[in-house]
Image 1 (cartoon, rainbow, N blue to C red):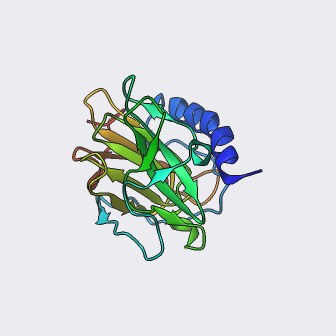
Image 2 (tube, rainbow, N blue to C red):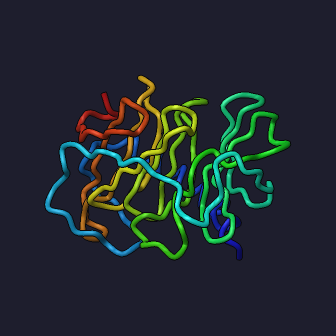
Length: 205
């Protein structure tokens, strides 16, 4: 099974996880199928670092085949976003013509040969400017300016889900424990993923 196909299969499971997490209070137990990451406690603030283009990777704006895309996320009838697996790298991709053509919308977010904590499996969009990638590792990669600048925030735990709350902020759910009995930490970003702050209010404030 190809990597892109596995992304499509994993997407519904990730969505169901988001629903379960959003309806529970921060600190409930959460299971993970990946190796546990031990952490003493949640950092109060996690700051993202600018992601730059790596040698040998596609330049932003490069046309990619729709067959390389995972699950699509459309913000309106014309504009959509997806994670594209091209070669040995994953890229954010975007369309402005209802999916007829797709182009990379930023630098490579992860190389297959890179460390597992940097991996991303899914990509979503809060709106046409705020797009985020997550899943499979300890990062949330996000842009708040439509792909011009992407920032990588690395957490002390596995990223379980990212959603947009009612205030328009990004909310990330992190498995901060050591196995099935670990706590779920909630972080909120109000600036498109550049900084994340630990938040214990349900749904993020």
